[in-house]
Length: 417
Image (cartoon, rainbow, N blue to C red; front, side):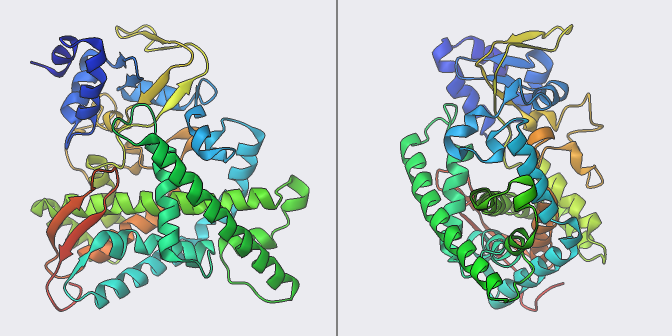
């Protein structure tokens, strides 16, 4: 019996839990393929799923129709929870300027050196989540973003709970302890604000005393001339600096852990990736990383809420009106394998353009620091795969949550290949 036949045979109240099980299965692609072919827009009492590439893009390109209102409870006035507002435009513009793309070689070199240092000190095995995929992004937050003198464990904790509340604490997240997650996120946010207020106060005092600051994002913001002319007061600075941490650690850790595991579990793919990792130019290797992440994505969906009624698939057999007030899940994990848009979508192709998937979102709410992640994630994976005879010891354990918590890897003595 097909997925949809099984679904249609159930009472309506029992359908979404089964859908949720299929979405979060080890490989939801067969379910997604059937949705694209038979029911590209699937309404449930909890939310409406959108499966085809063109319809997913339509949802994501209309931010005032399909809004990020669900984010507001967790993210408040942060720009990620706003759609086409002056504050969103201002904050994104300022922070994009600070996260200078000319820094990318410096960021990649830092990640390479820090990851090698960890691996060199580990002997011949490591628990890679705490040791690498969370540790290295935290080091980048400290040194490049400018969270000077911070407690690494606290940075991980703040990022974790913000991510849990912001992206994994909604009506469709069946089984989540919603109140506990939100309470922990509020507690962590308070701690982070206190830390950042002290950090900014100390940095301002150092500037007034004529001391030179390191070239990091916090220092750039404090030394820029944007505050007066365009209205970027201290409270805005604090909010957006906090957003750097929230977006950098847990997402990068999840992506990198899943990429490493996926490649290590597939010897032919691993062999090709290791060969590419040894090339002087890392671009070819990066293609293996992003293609592995297409098969093992951080999420199979984004989410929006309709502010007005809208018709998807107009003129098509699946034409569907989405009523106002509907939670909508554009299934990016389905869209990335849509054969009407991509050649041989089920084939592993490391030359496939990065925009063939939705690793950093799309459109108005595309990841602000996506270009940083484009070097952070593959360089962590590259340094791991350069270890001699690299192998998987224990697969990812999520401990009942959405994020990788442990991943055991080992290699032969003698360092890198």
